[in-house]
Length: 65
Ligand SMILES: [Zn+2]
Image (tube, rainbow, N blue to C red; front, side, top):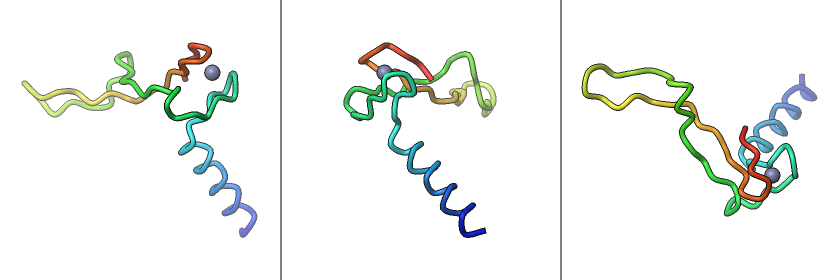
């Protein structure tokens, strides 16, 4: 159980750091966070702005994830 918890923390840390899976870039200034317009999460109704899933773009290698 302890091992599982540790693994989970590592995964969360990895997610927070926003490391590019392609080139390994983890400089937050070189990673842009944008709305993924192809993945609307939910909509609050008429006139409301829909929420989109976030995706990241590495400005070093142009990879999106
Ligand atoms: Zn990259």
